[in-house]
Image 1 (cartoon, rainbow, N blue to C red):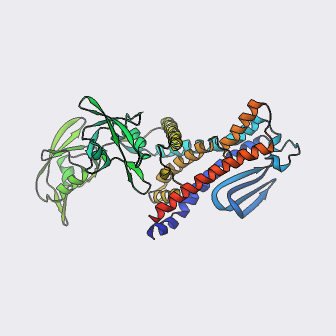
Image 2: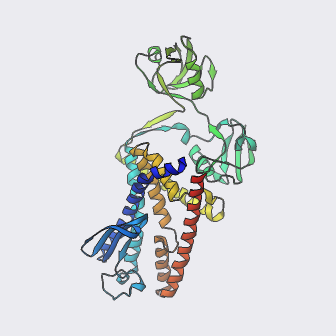
Image 3: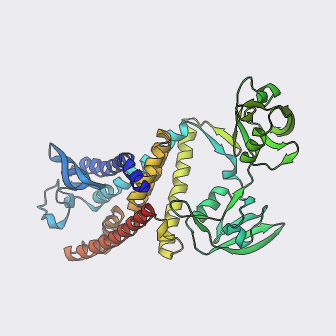
Length: 438
């Protein structure tokens, strides 16, 4: 019941995210069509009954009841519209013009992803260092999938299913879609290479693949309060905690617990600053029922990134390219069945994520919108009839055949595409509802 109530609380962020992305997509079709003089009869956000509409010139702009898509209706768009040969009709345009109209929607979504990512990057961020470090195991959770397969602390994951994993980001992306599936690992241990087979556990609300392993994490001081014991002893923001009283390898929760039970007890903190170890003598002070030293401790090391505009654009382009590659990899996995359909998220799942992300603030919500916009743009380029990529594929096939296909052939192609999309929608909505009930 709580999940269902939570879902309805997520409706507004979901409608905002989807509304913006659909508007941008359809705006791409609309602008290019109008650029070439094509008459646009309708510009709709959503499908079904029209809730709000206004007519300007030849175009009716409307908001419809079902907010899971949208459309731009052009004059003479299909053979069923009985084209009259009027130069303002869509089918009167050359294949090159029609190709540009179809392509404009997905490209607008990719462009929006670039813009939103650039905006987020310009705000700066503290980036975890381990994300770009080699995937060397610092923790292997007992009874986790990794431990059951024989993984050990210090192992370096070299490959996942023949995919090289040079960083933790690459390792996580390779495993996240493989819940409950057989995964082949190549592991480097003490100079030798081992072949292992592991079945990642399904973790979290969306059943992400999880091996139960963590990187080597070194807690870092993220804030020092003036006048408190840590500041008085000379501790600084950015110091990396190596040891307390000579005990190394303590995780953030263990460090906090040790401090809290050490009221008025001198402790020797060994920190790393500018690559060199420093010992600091700090006496935790009482703060109610626990002891504190006046610091905030991050669970891992970070580095601050504050890019200028040019650098932010370059980073955004790189992230967009990497994201596109991951989308294609996931789609390929669906066809080869290496990626389970249970990992595909539909409208209900997007609503859940949108609501949770909106509570974190505008920047996380913009980052989410960027990711979804990129997915929408790339997926629409798939050569599946009904999608923009399907229409582009038909244009290309007609160009190679040097003739237009008959209306009957096009109807059969579009029907097959519609059936495929319908089956996919039924599957993802079933997955979403099953998660909601669970």
